[in-house]
Length: 59
Image (cartoon, rainbow, N blue to C red; front, side, top):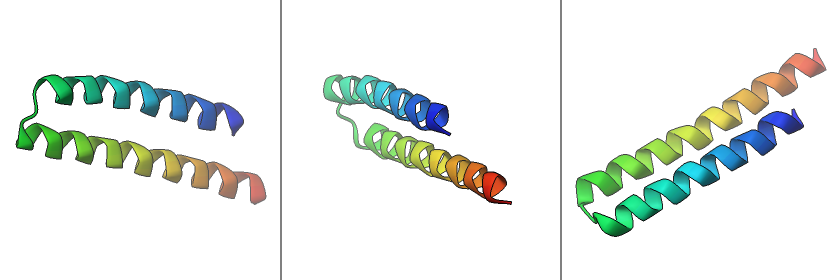
C-alpha cells in the first residue's frame, strides 16, 4: 500500500508540475479546464485504488 501511495504522489506531482509549466506558457481557458479535470481524475483514481487495496486487506 505504501508503494502505491508514494508512487501515486510522485506521479501526480510530476504531472502537476508539467501541466503547471504548460499552463504558465499557454494560459488558455479550455486548456485550464482540461488540466484541472485531468488532475481531479488522477486524484480520484488514486483514492479508489487505495480504497480497494484497503478493502482487500481487511477481508
